[in-house]
Image 1 (tube, rainbow, N blue to C red):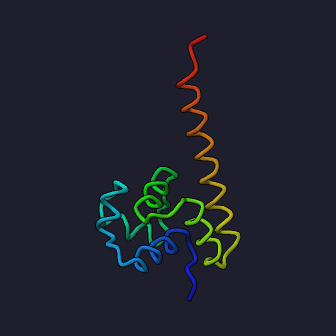
Image 2 (image 1 turned 90 degrees about the vertical axis):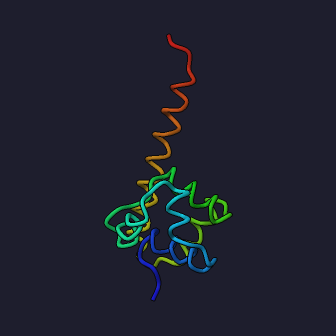
Length: 104
């Protein structure tokens, strides 16, 4: 059975590499019990957490997302997740750029 969410796809990569969910939780900054909520789909990863996960898995973020795209059959759900992540990333970049701009 193929994963239906980005979170489950990430957990599959983690398990495939023989890595601990507890280790990943520590690196990402979430309590291990939070991973069950993430895995069930009741909570999603943030962009900054995905970047930390990719680093932990020693994968470029793009490769991790590409893996998920190949694994997940529900394209509408995947598009929603990617759209939310892209919006969040744009906001983070905009905020970072504004903080670097000199005051007018």
